Length: 455
Image (cartoon, rainbow, N blue to C red; front, side, top):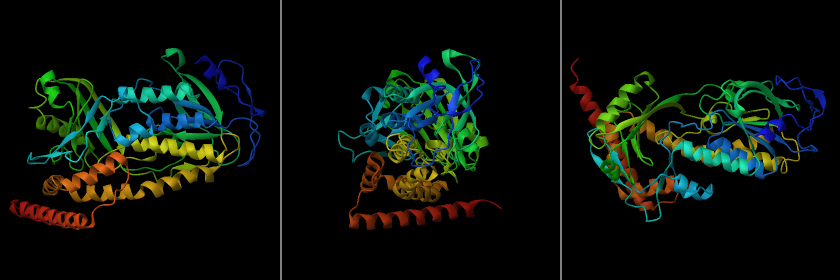
């Protein structure tokens, strides 16, 4: 990493001296104004802040595309609290090796508030599965691959940027360098042309460009080591629990990992009660996890919708930093990796493989493509969450619907391949009728329950 550290001071910018907080002599760097589309006479320099799937996939694409790339990540062994589920299409699309996939889930159980269990996955063929990963394993693989393709991996903590690149000058990044396993970071600066913020729900990059606030959920998860005979039950099975006891607006889960299970839940509307919901989640799954030992406790915010601003100047956001987590399912890994790659592809394309300067309009081309491709997906899942997660009767109706084979096929096809598969018109009409009937029944049950409550 010594070469990477020295590269930070070897920019071919010229004309202005920048004072570094490094103890070494300040470097003379080039900050001549260059208009978008003009030849640079050097490689376009891009800093990617955050080394999760979004940042690592962005860095890989940039490095392959000819840009001088710096991937800044503070916690190289970070174990982000995450269910860790990835769709089948991601394995092929992002060339993921089977070694990083802990489990191939081919069966799921949807469990209602009354503990009615519906088996889901009957429509999967013998080659289809949902991958279960540990984030510390997956993220490490993606970062190392980006490095092998030419990205400079920087063990550092992003602090701030002085100017988001609204003009044509360089963007100065301030960060604390933790190379050589230093316990105390060393304050340094770096000058780049473009910044991609992939630093999660609490993104500092987002704050620096005044990206705006958004609602977020708190996800709480415990990794539990259970006896081998119990683990056998979960070897290819995941469970999802719904009910007011485990979450007022989301679901609880038991997902299998390499040698343990991840048991967790989340909520937006009552974050302070998250430990109460987690206790209820453990209670719901206690028989199947009996004899287990908690080996790790994790909690993390999850964005609920895209940020109001996702680009300013030559700074753009991807992944959780941009707010790309779906409602209803809470899926974020695939969309993080995809957004990182799409943002980087826009930079590579508009800069003609890192040879030309870019501007805000070039970065917005990524947002336009993203919104066209995924806006409908986010909207539909938002509606489903509002309809079916609002009360226990609605959740009972939701689980009842999941027993329908056609519902399972359409759901899994959409999830596994991230495409909207045209349905059978007759079955679509039946599904619409069943959905309306389920909603009406749920409303009737909810009203009946309210009527029984003493005043």
